[in-house]
Image (cartoon, rainbow, N blue to C red; front, side):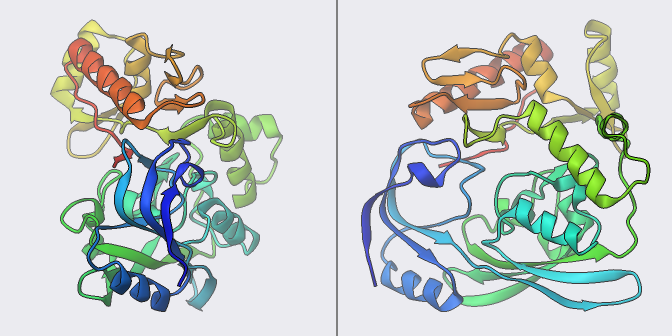
Length: 336
C-alpha cells in the first residue's frame, strides 16, 4: 500500500484551494476502501468525490479517501422504465450524456452539473424544474464504522431541497458506493423553467427530444456559470431560500421586482442570486476572492485565495442579505 502524506488537495477541489491532507488515497473497490479504513482506523476519515461542492478552509488532519468507484449497468427494465446503476465515482455529466445516448429520459435537465454520481443523492441535486429524487430508485452505501453495506430507498434518503439524510444525522458516516436510477423510456419534457423554451427556439429545434433539452441546458449554464477549469468555483454557493407566502407579500411591498417561484404548501422560493446582486455583490472582488460578474450566486477564487477568505466573503454576503431583506441565506457548499 502506498501512503501519500502531507498531500496537496488543490487539484482535487474545484475552488482550487491549497489545503493539505495528512494522508490521501484513492479507492476503486469496496475491498480497497475497507483496507484503507482499517489502516487509518486511528484517524478521522473524509470521503472525497469530485471536490465540486466543498470549501477547504484549513488542512485536514486525517485521511482523505477519494471515491473512484466506476461502472454503468442496466439492471433491468419494464414497459415504462429502465433501472440504471452507476458507480459513485462516475462523472455526473458524462453519466447524463450516456443516458441520453441510450434514450433513457429523466435527467437531461440536470446536464452539466459538476460533480460525481455519488454526490447527487447527498445534495439532492436539481436544476430547471427537475431534482434527483424525481429519478432516484435506490443507493448502496458503506457504513464507515460498522464496515458493512446498506441499501437506501427513496424514503430512507429523506430528500429535501438540496438536502438528504446524508447531510443530517448520517453526515460523514457513509461512503456512497453506487446509485440506481429509474429512467423513462418515453420522456416527459420539462421546458417551462428558466429560459429553456427560448433557448430551444433559438437553437431552431423543430421536434423536441431529450438531447435537444440537454443541449439547451448546457448552453444556458455555460452562458451564466464560469467553468471551474477557467475560474475556480463551486457553482451556486447559497441555496435559494424558501419563505411563507405572507413573508413574500411583505417583501413585495418594498421590493416589487423581487424574483420568486411559488411552491406547494403556501411557500415561495426566492432567487438568492437576485438578492445578492441587489446588495451590490455581483462582480465584487477583494484580493483573489470574489463574486462572479455574470452570476452573483457563484463565489470564485481568481487565483490564490485562501478558503478562509472565500468563507469570510460568504459571511459578509449572508449578513448583508439578511440586513436588507430579513432573509437568512444558507450555504449550499460544504465547509471543511
